[in-house]
Image (cartoon, rainbow, N blue to C red; front, side):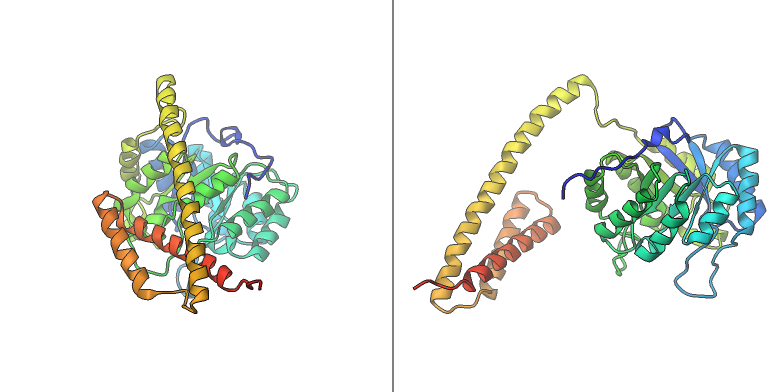
Length: 367
């Protein structure tokens, strides 16, 4: 798929902050007026980098009878926090009524959550409610790793006339107990950036990590991948939070984390660009060699398929595949290549071989 053209406003022209990266912070949930005000005050005091205050007002929970947010009442708390601290405000919206109420209470930025992005009907309802409105909107990736769903949600909001539009990468559910609460799968946001190079991208390390000790690692990775900002949850007393307590930081801890981040520029300096171009030329040549080698391999696979067809042999030869995999993994280890990557690479190559052989085996032979 080639680049998609959209009329988008760069994030530095959103009227939010001329600072890069954009830092958004606040509690997972707005719990009480006191909690909201204390968090906002502490953020302003400890982390001047934070320009936008976030808080969950409506919380989509997996099961009923858990804390689902305070609701409309909390929107007036955000108004008070903004009036006192000057922080802009941001909330998640999941339906048209949420949009109307948030805008009525002067919320500055809206975001669409992962559970909503996964449903085109819900996204379209929100898009319809946004027609004629000039407000920044950010779209989180869907829970499942589906680039088309994410892209489709962004397109729906853009078609409503929203040009201050961004994406939020918050990781993907794997259904397994892994290192992260939601696996980053960086290749998906990278591909979205390739398709929409003008689309601002914010990373949500809190939901990716699910626990505090991984936040610095993921935040740095996001910035190194040229993302435009971070959304990190902060709470005056995370261990007493009403939701997602393990992934929230105190404002003091957030200040410490932000102080450790290394900010790098995509363009570097003039000398680094000259040297980088030499390395990239070398990479280009190697990539051409890789593609040429794969093409040659595919032609040999076609000959193997013809032989198997002639001698009525099955496509899959389990013992041979097992032999190849063990041999290639041993070679990869000697070359210092990552085992997981090497295995996935050869599995893909093997699948390509099966597709080629299937096509040849099912091709009628002219007599």
